Length: 298
Image (tube, rainbow, N blue to C red; front, top):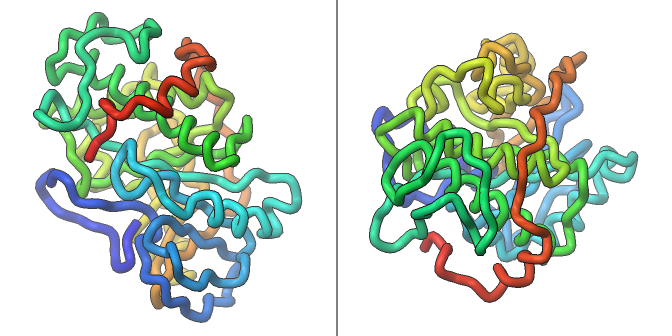
């Protein structure tokens, strides 16, 4: 999500910082036609936030995977004052996603391990190539790091909703199967850690990045948060849009007004079955990551 309309670039670009609600710090009067939420992240650091809306979604990263939103703790505190949070629903978060491949600077796996822990890989053995097997390990590791970031901000809660922000503005491989494997690795780790997971994107972007998703994939039944609406009324209409995968349900839609992103929760959204948990690295490794910077995507 961005301060203007969501990107619809035809090619997959590298190294642009993107994320839900990359809006300027200036605020605008919220539309009043429906009960709405806001999503915010690092672009709002140092700026005045609106009065807590009905619900909120906060970005964990600083625009790319394995970076940190420097205002995460403060923004979570703001979001936790929304009626949804005070009513017992943990504030949702979103994380950036990307599949870089074995390039010079970003970390890329060469085996089915991370921080010395083995990872059960549905795509076989990772050999350091830009393969689905290695993309799965990379996604798994990035989600692990995101949980560490949220823990360090004091915001880790089992059962929190995590949205995977899938946009063409971050780096992706030409192999759609590998890109889907990246997202599956993230999903499997987060579900194994006790989170609920959904996908934020548009049909155009998600299809261009991950292609068609098979029913056996852990992405197939995830909730969808669709971007691209232009008003409250079109956000409501987007609830009837085709989901990103045939087994998914559109539960949330987004539009931009003024300098903020607004979100509409679709009524009577079905609760799809949660994906099955997958093995994850030992929790004791969280402290080890705090001193490890080799995996940072800069």
